[in-house]
Image 1 (cartoon, rainbow, N blue to C red):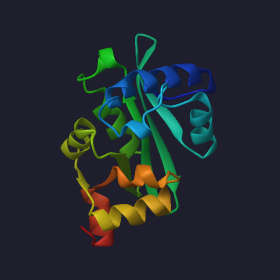
Image 2 (cartoon, rainbow, N blue to C red):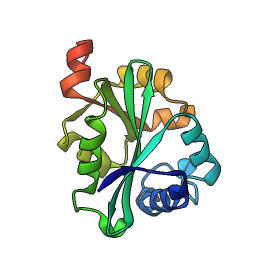
Image 3 (cartoon, rainbow, N blue to C red):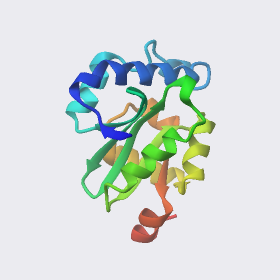
Length: 169
């Protein structure tokens, strides 16, 4: 079952994010890695900034979470994580399809350039990397991240909406 996460799910969201994000250790730039990867305060800030988390629950346990955030004329997919022991079971795809169905806006996704598994996942689901110049424009406009993170990130856009709407490739 996919459901909107509640305030009472906060600790579980925190746990899932930090469990799955262990895959980044030694992959993303060392100066971007933190332990825990996402601090409590950062997660609170993301929610206060409008990120709404949805989760896939099975047998009463949240196995994966994915955030959605409307920003002006686009929708961002934020903080997509699946528990380590539940990966490769289609949970991320199910969450992504559910969130896609919630918006008519173009969808943008930012992730670490070095997280090749994440980039591949989004590409398999119909997203395409934008150019370096477009990436920098989009990250500046829609995200609030440090310059160093911008340098080491990529942005993917949905082929169906974004590229047709903007004509940019």
